[in-house]
Length: 192
Image (cartoon, rainbow, N blue to C red):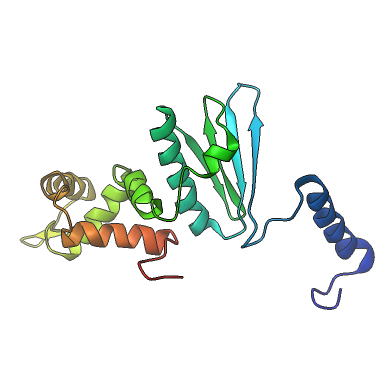
């Protein structure tokens, strides 16, 4: 009550009750070292795997994309994701084995799985346009006239189709870097 300036009857009792309820139901409360995973079937018979991960939206965005990509590869169907600051949910059309599902993404496959999940997204195309503009591969102005964003995007898409498969091309690398480290929180090589 002193540390968080809560009164006994309002905040403190509610918080303690919530934590005890989670411990009784799930055998623990999610922390940065102890994550909880549960399954849920909705009215439309879609199966959701809910990850309680209190690590923030940027981390959960990366994790959710990795799990959705891995699930799509494993089950041969698309997966839908919902992301919050305190977790994420992957929704599938078929019921997976939860113990198997949790292990679809490993620390060794995580980076490549996230990359695969963002490679063909609109976010990647837009971020590539920004990076290509800074690299003077796509012009914003020509002979004193502004080039529309639509036209810039069309030119950027053409450039991306040409160089996109070149392993290690600097502008493509920078695009991945900006998405994975600025928009998401995917640690780089050598991080702990």
